[in-house]
Length: 406
Image (cartoon, rainbow, N blue to C red; front, side, top):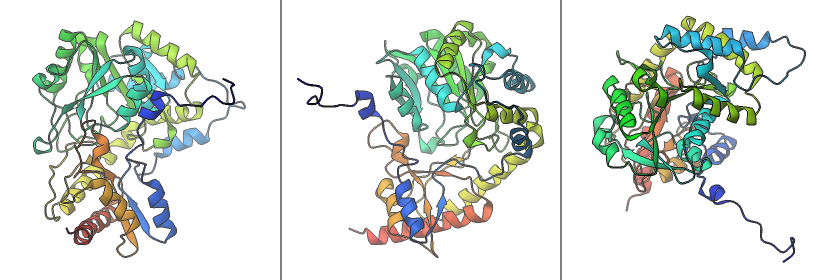
């Protein structure tokens, strides 16, 4: 058979990769905007709070004449600032415990690739950040969901729920607290339980702590770095995107006190050469000046959460609990199908020349059939826009149900 006649095919990995439920409706939103309809984006965790001036000034002040390759592990000034940041939180690290990554996404991919082989499994409380599925697919691993429940505020699953899903293929437990998409914050006892279980079963513990500061009403986000007795199996993954309102910077990090593991991570880092240099300069300034802006940022998000909950409570049939952290809420809405509803809001509905875009809930589940009546709402807009967006959502639900009566 000649090369010309041979059928081209894509990999199994390519076919298994899911489209993002957060972004897959973007073409419909773009068409709505072309028709003159304003779209309130509650589908994506893109804050509208200005990136702190100290970060932007550091980026503008970059003076090197050549934008050269940087160190694969990240520039030293940033690693030092990250170390100082964690020191102020009570966690003693060295700069060698820190690897700067191209956003939190690369941190998760590196962690999965370092601890798993093709076909291996990682247990994840469900619902979960949708890209965990994609990252696992890229690493030829499988996400095994461990259910949480809306009626319980999506609290951490019990030890028994994890135990019944551990098999010879299980390599890790991965969790996110404060949680995307639910806003749940795991208690210290939950983090300790997960650490002890991983130690008992010979597993890694992977913790996504991107929303560490975003805890409300006195809640505390306990870090996996508190588990000093299990430090050799703990991998923490982080990002500047949310706490610095700098999603486009694409700077994150991996933290582990396991030196052998960090040596492996560095080899992955060397393969992709280096993270972006100018953004690291900005991130270093962000960590250096974090106390000047984070204390005002968190109350602003708590206020936004309260606005969303206030407006959702006015929707007959909406079911939710007030989230304790992050900037997401996962309500169950009185609709027949969240995917169809989210698309319809962009194609068929507008109120006063505006509509609202949400992320359908099923994309945050690995279990088929779950999330059909749920949506993820990111409360990342300023007060007036946020209130109007949820009010438009309420009117859309009413109109949708009237248009789809059986």
